[in-house]
Figure 1: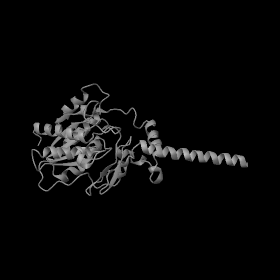
Figure 2: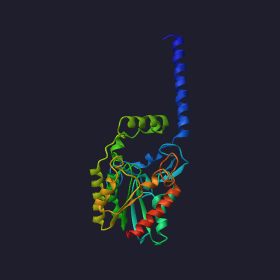
Figure 3: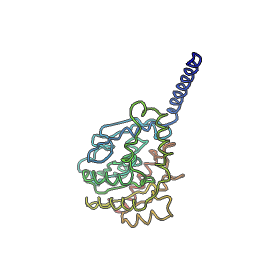
Figure 4: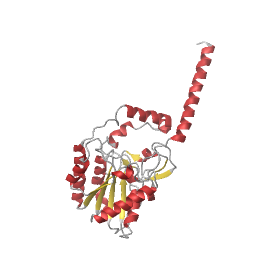
Amino acid sequence: MSKTRRRTVRIALFAFAVLVLSAEIGLRWVFGNMAQTSLYTLSPSGGACVGLAPGLSVTYTGWFLRIPPVLHEVNLQGYRGDEPMPGASPRIAFFGDSFVYGQGVTVGESLPAQLQTSLRRQSAGAAVVNLGVPGFNLEESVDHAKRHAAGFNPDLLLLALVHNDLEPSLCSSTGTFPPGGLLRGSYSFRGLFYAYKMVGGRYLSLPEDPAALDAGLAAFRSVSAQLGVRPAVVVLGSPLRRLPPGELENRLNRSQIPWLNAHTWLEPGGLPTIAGEGHLDPEGNRVAAERLGAWLLEQGLL
């Protein structure tokens, strides 16, 4: 290789490195760090495939666009929030995904914590346990209830149903998480990785299987029956949104589980959400908690 050619290659490599570094710096100003993925463990207690790692905490700045930093933590028992006080009653074990966990807000601003605050105006001993795990689908949330609900001696099992609850499980994705080290910390690499997964079709044009919804609801009802407590569902989004109107309502009614239709809370003009995030902001969670608490009391579920 001639001296001139070597010089040209060095200049090209330097320009490429500068471009990548500039892109990395720019992306960090625009996009969040997706730090919720650092809270997972592949060997949680109870034998599940994936769960939250006890005792971990991270500073989260968004799963897509950057938001103000907020602490996301997991207590030593493997869930978010304080342990219920001995003798607390009524007790609600609240299951679901990131909307229950409180992605993008502090633990005290999460939906379960604000529901507990709302209910304590009626009963000072009320306790709501936050058993949400970001990324869980319906099957995983129900399995989480099956494995862990009994340990909290609940009076009610509450499940949040959302629009992506019939998508592939978090467990099925654990083998495709980005590698660790510098690559996982790179915003450029992570963006390319998830773009590849999206374009690869894993999360596009997914079938909406009504039978999977029926099975999930039946399993949730069965877990409640085994514990001798009542189940309830709050519908924050329809996992059957591409099917004819009324399909979700019909199947929920057939499940014989009391349910609250709250899908409009997350629609445009509904409750306030975190810009660039999609999750409810502190005020959105507060209003949602007030409405949910009032419904639980009106239905005689507590």
